[in-house]
Amino acid sequence: MLGKLLGDAFNAIKDEEERRNGVKRAGRRPPRFASLEVVVATVFPERYSMDPFPEAMRKLLGERSQRAFAHTAGFHQTTISKLMKGDYKPDMAILERIADAAKVSPGFFREYRALYVAELVRLVLDERPHLSSAVLRDLMNLRNTT
Image (cartoon, rainbow, N blue to C red; front, side, top):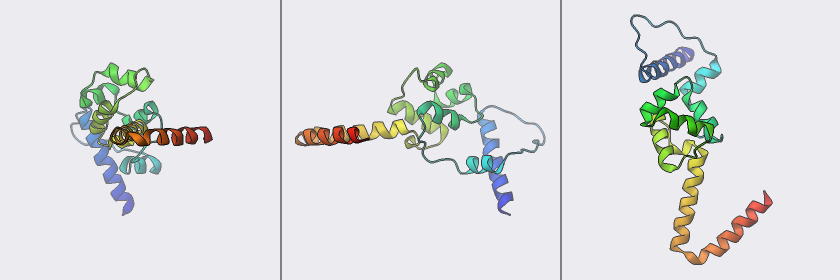
């Protein structure tokens, strides 16, 4: 029974991906075959990635084309390509648009989490400048121990 439910969820997700990519089907869809690992990863995607952006994006795209995803996200395909090659570093706004198009939290990307923490630190230090030298010292000590 659980296998049937996983298979149905997997097929529904794949059908939706095909619709988003412009695939039109007439009649019955041929059966899909995938390993249990692929089915589970599709039905229960990772909530957060520890991979650098290009690798995380590659996994997030799955079988989707860069062009189809770029259209969904409101980018040109070359922008997605350059981001995935590492030619451009994404900022928070770009990561938010990509996450929205991929239907994941922006925090999925480790770069977003790092930028978010950096912005929070900046805001706190702007409000409490007397903390800046102590925080800087602690961060430098932390960096030197890793």
